[in-house]
Length: 242
Image 1 (cartoon, one colour):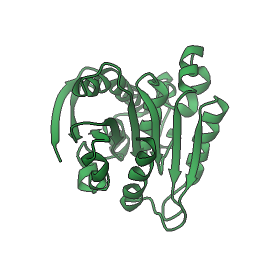
Image 2: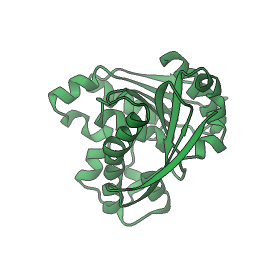
Image 3: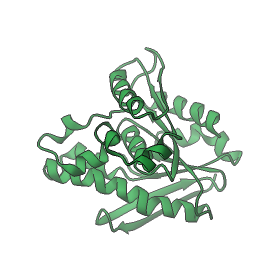
Image 4: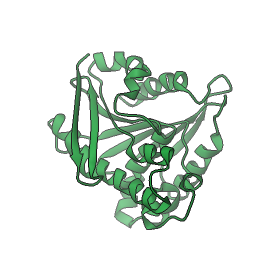
């Protein structure tokens, strides 16, 4: 399996961000790491291996990048207003820097991308789809945390609102919302240790109220908030989409 790792200094984030890719051809899939993860986390935890048949068959090319905003929340970088700003700037980095880089790598100016992720990565996948439906057609959100208020530990501002699908869907413009309503969101969650399907229902209710197609998939008590769950989920849903 071909692997490529690159990095550049992001204008939006004012820091270096690493990006990794596995595979040569196929539909691009951007997998966001968990909160403290880096671009190669999904390889270390064998998610790439779990998708190896799809990659080998040329059905998908898998990309990932550092979890800049998730890491900032995990370590408490700056105050809550700084973290709110960083939430937005990371999603803007995705739309304005990483999406063009993925499309250039795929040699297509308009190829559509599938967003995916687990835990905070699920939040980022949903936020990327909601803000950039011209680039992303589907979001596979696994064991997600979507209400980030409790992680801010202080006041928030318009940047937090801009980055949070639970807060901004009803403020999107008509054309933006019309395109978003042609997209699809999967909200998958186990019922085992440290899972909270209530978070998925919060996201589903916000998406449903905005007319965005979505479904909540409950995987049962044998599936905890951990990598064995996400190794099973991601190839399962990708197989349906590609």
